[in-house]
Amino acid sequence: MPETYGGYKRISDDPYDLRAGIERQEEDIRAEVVRQGSAAERIVWYSENDTSAFKKKRITVSDPLGNVYDAWRVIRPVWHQALHDLRTRKITTLVVWDLDRLARDPRDLEDAIEAVERYGARIVSATASAVDLATEGGQMQARMMIIMANKSSADTARRVKRWHAGVAKTGAPVGGRRPFGFEADRVTHNAREAELVRRAAQEVIDGVSLHEIARRWEAEGVPTVLGGPWRHTSVRQILRNPRLAGWRTYKGEVMTDDAGGPLSGTWDPILDEDTFVRVRTVLAPSESGPIARRGARHQLLSGIVRCGRCTGKMYAQAIKNGRFNYACRGRTDLPHVVSVAGKPVDEMITDLLLKRLRRVALERPAASFEREGELVQIRSQITELMGEFSSRRLTGSVVFPQVQRLERERDLLQAEKDRFLAATAGPEVRPMSLEEWKGLDLDVRRAIAERNLEAVLVKPASGKGGGFDMERIDPVWRPSQADGTSSRQ
Ligand SMILES: [Zn+2]
Image 1 (cartoon, rainbow, N blue to C red):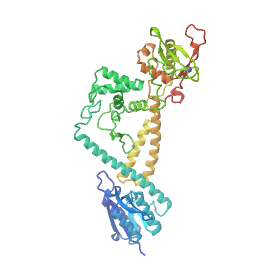
Image 2 (cartoon, rainbow, N blue to C red; image 1 turned 135 degrees about the vertical axis):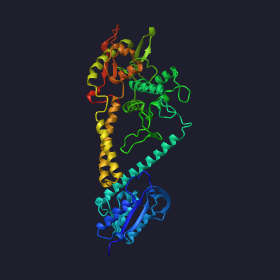
Image 3 (cartoon, rainbow, N blue to C red; image 1 turned 60 degrees about the vertical axis):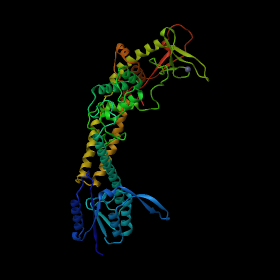
Image 4 (tube, rainbow, N blue to C red; image 1 turned 30 degrees about the vertical axis):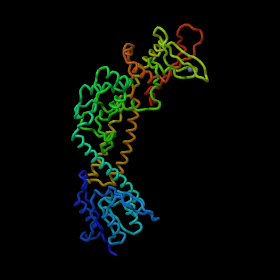
């Protein structure tokens, strides 16, 4: 029985789809049929519209037991006709332009594989003939390509959505809330607010609390966007907004470009990317978190000082004449009282801390991610490959495995960068004089102490009485970054 060829082409009405036009598909399919030794005039053509290729509709189906249920399927009458013709041998070979044109829904591919395996049909790609659905390896490759093609469909869908979102945004911003730091056009910086944001971001990284920033803005008479008083929650919301880094969001999520990087908006960023990521890291809720925010954190080492008997955290307690102690009142199962004069401990630890800052500063890692260049390069390679695929210079079977490999590399590098940024979020470790130290906010000094000290153990008093006994104080330093262990979770 002679071979009868069918040619399957897909008409795209997706304005974002830059892939081969219908003439090009026809031309390639004809060429393939001729190459296989048949006459191009006898091809039975199947033309399908692209939009239906991955949109699902609800239909009623029945399972092999006869149960009827609702199912969501891609309805492709032309495709089903082609399959039917293969099964009934009206045609014996179906030539498709590329495998991702053949099927987007994995079910469709399985139907195609079944036609090949059980009905002796042949399905041939005009551009990637190496993929043979009759072999297990070919089936595997086809399945993988469908998954990748689905991903790019989803990307296209996202782009379209993004475009609509963009139009909606430029349409009428009436009633939409102006983001703090920007004017009503959401593009122009509000100079004063942008400066406040930059300052607050650095302060948060340095350890100043959101409460403190809210308090300051309130005191400086900075108006909120909606009027009303400043709260730490609104400061948090402002500082965590990806728009500050120039990134676009859609429904609260940062949109990504084809290479998986954040998609930039049309406005200039208020914060550079690294600063923004560090702020996010500091503001992210974490279990180990900063030390307990109990009432008495009015002193440098509240909660950092720990009891030598029970290792519990010690907090400042005011005593007369403006002096204070760090004290542990014991536990019910281990009654004891350990307390130490606060001021001399603070002075002693401050002295040690400033010496340590001078030493550690020499070992401090660079403030920017060293492998940034590689990351940028991988992203642009991915974009380039997807571009080659889009413009049809390379086929999916060539592009997708490479893209997958690059995506893995990119994800590893990105994770490394995230760890780096998290480890370097925190007060700057630099040598400073005692005067400079004293000029810093308490929050900042506490953050520096916390970053360097695991704890300060206080042994119970020896009973001799008398003055301050330095022997009782035992600082436990955190490893510095240069030791290779991150000191902050
Ligand atoms: Zn204790």
